[in-house]
Image (tube, rainbow, N blue to C red):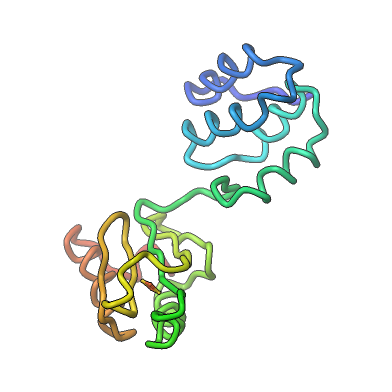
Amino acid sequence: MVKLPDTPEHNKVKDFVANFRGDPGSLIKVLHFSQGVFGYLPPEIIGYVAQELGVPPSHVYGVVTFYNFFRTEPIGEYEIRVCLGTACHVKGGKDVLETLCHRLRVKVGGTTKDQKFTVNTVRCVGACGLAPVIMIGEDVYGRLSPQRAWNIVKGYYEREGLSETEGSS
Ligand code: FES
């Protein structure tokens, strides 16, 4: 029996899920809502949703991994999306990705320890003329070298008066 802690976030999910008890057809809707509350799907939420909707946890995990939209890890304050579409790949997008992962000490899909950045890849953001391109949040940066990409990320830390290695070491 999965019992959720008594936090405002968990209570929000409990109240929402109560409307769909025993209704497996509402799984996506409930997961979507829960991710909206937490920013990701913590394991206890997956267990709770499975129990309340009456579906096996393995099925819930299957759905969560099938849809890119769902995440089981917390996301950073900023999401960096490194374009690996054809134009960006040809112009060195992979080097940009490797440099950012190396400097931020994360793997693709990972989040820095200070929860500032999550690094992901994307297939073409529609700015091929600027290849190679990254997006940070909704901002697009193009014609990058690995160093220039890193300088941009460092700029986010500098603006907030933080050392870029503070949270990522
Ligand atoms: S391939 Fe990167 S923007 Fe199109």
